[in-house]
Length: 80
Image (cartoon, rainbow, N blue to C red):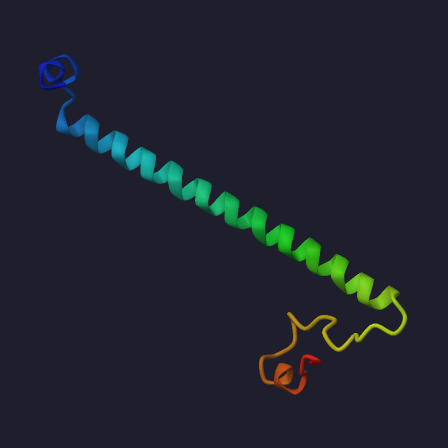
């Protein structure tokens, strides 16, 4: 591999540009994945809330628990 180095010589400027652009692409992909996960989680939460509303006898104390203040959630206890 040491013999191949002069064939693939890149200046420091090009290495810096490639490194910076790959970091920017990685950060954009990270934000895209986080946004997708947040939308997926919100959709799943809506579906679970709807199931809790639809099933008779279901404990609905947790409906919209993600939007309640943290101090109000301490009064809700899990069974068991």
